[in-house]
Structure formats: C-alpha cells, structure tokens
Length: 170
Image (cartoon, rainbow, N blue to C red):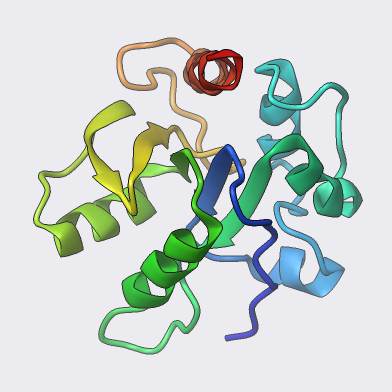
C-alpha cells in the first residue's frame, strides 16, 4: 500500500493518529482529503486550528503543535497495524497528547499494549509518555447518531482541544 509521510516536528503538543490513508487522499497527496471527511472542520470548530484548513494546508500543522501519524503502513495480512513503527515515531516526536481519530487504531494499539478496549475520551494509559485520547472518527462513513453517549463528534474534539490548551497554558 502506498502511504503518505507523517507530518510532525519533535516536541509537538498533539499527534493525531489516523488508521490509514485512503486511496482518494493518497491520490490527492494529502491526509484527510476524502470528500465527506469532517477532519478539517472538526479541527477548526474545536479550536485546535485558528482557521479552517484544507488538506493542502497540512504542512502548517506542526507550527501549531499538531502532527499527523498513520498506524497502517501495509495492508498485507495478517495484521496491517504497524504498532512498532508507530511507537518509534512517537518516541521521536515526543507529543504531549496522542489522539486516535477513531477507535479502530486505538483498539489495535491498546491490544498490543495489553490495555482494555478503549472507549471514547481520555484514557488512563499513556504511549511513549504521552497522554491518550480517543476521538470519534472524522470519516464521512461515521454517521452515527450517538457518539459514546454524546449527540455529536465535535464535543469530543472540543474536549481534547481544551486539554491541549490547558497543557500549553500550564
């Protein structure tokens, strides 16, 4: 499978972990470039970015303390999740927070670390000394009416933004 490069600089405040870059995003050369994906809108509406970015603006994220890291590097069976590479990247990036964009990737990493299947929100465990938060997926396919007991995805993204902002202010 073709992948896009992760986007981050050492010491970022937040690494957002996607599961895998879809074919549309890969063809367009940018993360979260699929039509219907609410990633950029959620990033802005939650307060994580000061303006509404487009996929073409992804290289501006590290200046805001945000990085993008994907968990899947190869779709070959038996396990497409490259947790070892993911962990090595996080040790190098040293984010204060890791947010999984959806539970699929969070489930895979938790399983590898011997943690229980995570619910949405802040987790009790850490990865590479970073606190962990699980977000409802920004995918256009995620049209649930109930997101972990909340009526929308944005409230979870806003909670994460508040935690990251509190750390920056401390």
